[in-house]
Figure 1 (cartoon, rainbow, N blue to C red):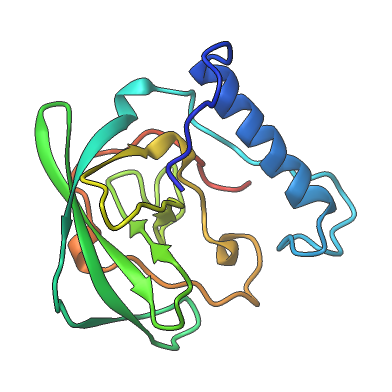
Figure 2 (cartoon, rainbow, N blue to C red):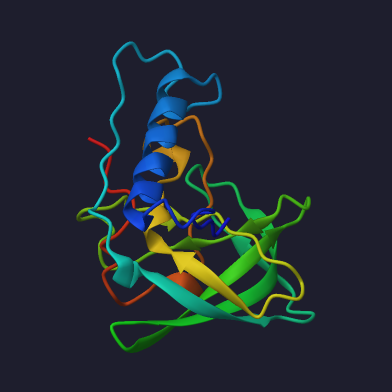
Length: 180
């Protein structure tokens, strides 16, 4: 979900810091964490917050766009509906990402790859949670909220790989980095 601070008294950097703190707490105490059963405290690694990776994207809905089959980390395929294209710019370079919708109404799904993969970020791409209404024309796309799929931490998870359409030929030095 493309979340933003609800109060103007909360700075953007504080908002991201709070989001990361909540993620840290979830990963360390939740029964739904991919780290269940790990005895030590888990610390995730992040890039510093960079507002140039928080962009306004134009939503271009895909009418009757058909389906797309994605491979997963465990070799099983998953089918998604093509839902929308997000068009935006980073460093004055026009880019777009394909937003998918789960076949079981799981909500929207955005997975992407970029030039940081296999270097400073997970090789299988990263995800961004988002949601927008049918009437929305624009959305804040915040790469500072990009996170690793659970299969980065635990091989028992099956994680969809980003579609080829979502390979960005730029380095997105924002969000979560490789887990060490």
